[in-house]
Image 1 (cartoon, each protein chain N blue to C red):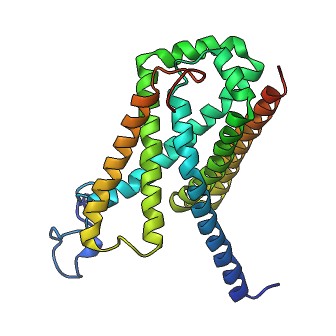
Image 2 (image 1 turned 180 degrees about the vertical axis):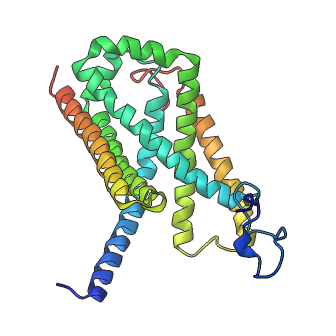
Length: 122
Length: 150
């Protein structure tokens, strides 16, 4: 068993790690966000053929996937701290964190597999 | 038992009659400074963006496995409420990014003086509005494979 002081130390190291991860993902997201916003506003005027062609090319699918993965991890870090700040009951908080992780992870895995499929179909 | 009072009795010293006492500022009556409004907006936009991210993650899946649903999606996206929603989501994205960059500046121990706060608040709001307007001016009504400058 570790002593309480080392428990506290490992907890604060973990918190500092999350703090740094939040900043690093934020920095990565600055250029990706500009790119992604420009993709998003062109969506209403695009047809299925445009999207098939567009997502099928790595020039577009890679930054798309990059934005999705980095922003999902950034969202996880943010939603996690929102839960920790506002949900007091430990069981409810844990359940909430599991639900958020499941939703974000599931959505991202589906998206990544779909992009993979699209880039391998003619 | 006496009728419940609107004032908390515990605040009155023993032997003294309860009288209205000032309470610490409550969020309902306390006018938040602009910096605090932007701070809570950063959290709120973060949650809104996360929900939107889940919806956007479905897009490649629809294109890959259920293309017959795409027409429905495109019709929905063409409606006014969806367009307004898209504008607001993109604004939330730029606002969250602008405030996030400000957090990075704060982390470097800059912009923390009171005189900087108002100026940086206005810059942050201005930049997010300009980026949203710029994105829509350059790219709206353009298709992904069109000759958009972006």
